Length: 540
Image (cartoon, rainbow, N blue to C red; front, side):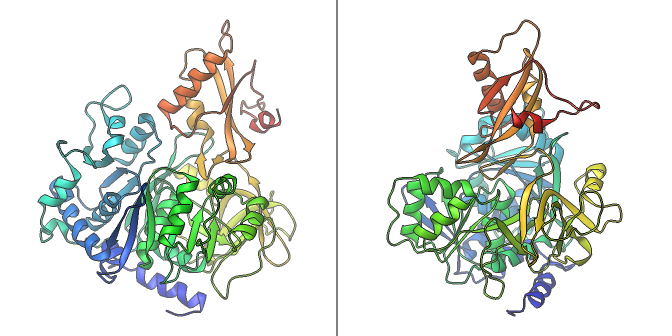
């Protein structure tokens, strides 16, 4: 492997962006069979090592099972699963079959799940047994749903049981042969939310693995002898890209915690398994800082990274004093992965500047454009953070699925610049500083939440005439949702109604995305054209 970043980018593109590229080969089969891909850790700290040889055999069996279920190359298959051995086998089986993975966050409620399954045309969904009730036919899930449901981690009585399907199929079945899709072939389809309209489908081609692999090396500086742990949930881009896909592409060992979040448990995992390279959203670091549990003396992090929301100075100073390593801020999007960072690798590593998210990584060229033109803004001048599509060989996003108008809004008229939707500025040395989003998407604990998704649920209540949702500062989560609600005539805003609306959002959208406070107001501030001025609500 070359140490020259530009040459390394070319090497990676030559691996992943080819007509004969196969996801199963690149993510699994080419790695030594005895190497450990993942150590799956349970809440009681018991663990299971998943080798590449085991994953190859198991995913080949599951690929054959998918073929028998009628899944063809190019079909979409969803997962509603937590971090587990079954999830890794399922994903590799999907990609071995040449199918497209649709991740579903386990906190989603049935309507959010149904939308993504229907919008992607999913042929099947693999669900943990404890998530199965969200897929049962009711007013949100159609009785004649077109997708098949495979149950993982159940008691074996389901019509389609994951474990039994794997066991019953022979690795030599023709359906288990790794399908070649090529660099432009689809690998994943995620959905990202905005301020208006339904969530947008983001198609991720196989060649995006070049970018994910590059970030493992440049951004994280993951080495062969590292024990790497990215604590992000694989139902979201940062977790899927860099807790699963990146490590599999690079062939490096990684931790998967098959348990809910707990600061004391995280310290125990770091100590027991000798984690040396750690990544998480700022919320996780703030929770670790607030936890009274003494940090074990044996925790020895070599690298610590943060992404998902701006990293606050308090986390940086705490990490330096208590972890003996400075947490570095990294920046990216669902549509691209990470492309600006305070990189860790030797040769790119520089002294962190307070408040900066770093510099563009190799393979990416960025700029801050003026607010009223597509001209590059001078240093220290606020503007729009953009990616130069003409000189960013690792850029893989070309547009949203079946949404040409939304795609066009992301690119300048001449197609040169991709507009991130974020505001920022640079300094004289090329460091980037995040200012704000130029839309109203809320980032809570690293999760992107579109106001429209929550507002659409609130107005379902018979008493609600209008609703607007904004993000408000929160010391632990970065931002939390608060709702401003206009009630119908004759209805009073009560504590009981606030609880009803919060519960409605949990049931109809997602458990994590309910408004922490509901303000009952006589009207919403709007522009002459009728657009809600959320910035005025935030000022309130």
